[in-house]
Amino acid sequence: MNKFMLFITFVSLGFLTVLSTIDPNSSAVWLASPDQSFDILRSGVMVVLLVLMFTNPPRNVVLRTIVGISAIALTSWSGYMAYESAIQILDGLVLLAAGITSLVAVLEFEGEDAFSKPIVSPNYKKSHKNKHVHAA
Image 1 (cartoon, rainbow, N blue to C red):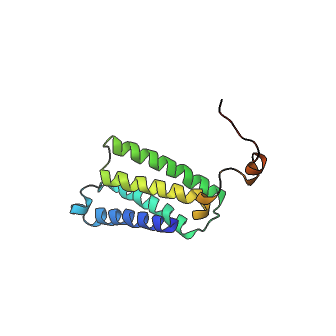
Image 2: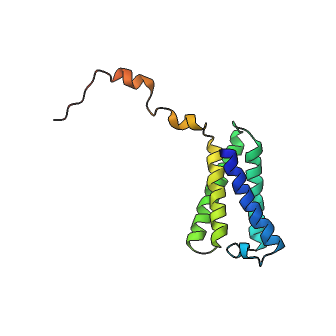
Image 3: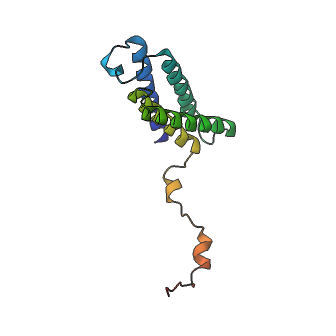
């Protein structure tokens, strides 16, 4: 599922980059910025998404740290700029999705098992088995 999310975000960034470069007046780019600076930003994020798609967990700690910090920065920046209406809404949403997707990929959840593990340790039930709390 994680690779699929990375791929869909990569495709949406690529779609915006190609359309804003080839035909900046098309109706699909009306809600995205055709500026060259956004093309460079989108291309850089696409490179990071490609690296995350082609490397398998467990990833290098340095890579995880750099991508994690940049994902947090990208998410907060794009969310703030979209809220302030400083960037086009489609750019804000796609960059926000890219930041969240790369942050989830860097955290390296183990799939369904990561959410089905108990929060408390198995020894907790053994040590608190005979202790009952009575309300006063």
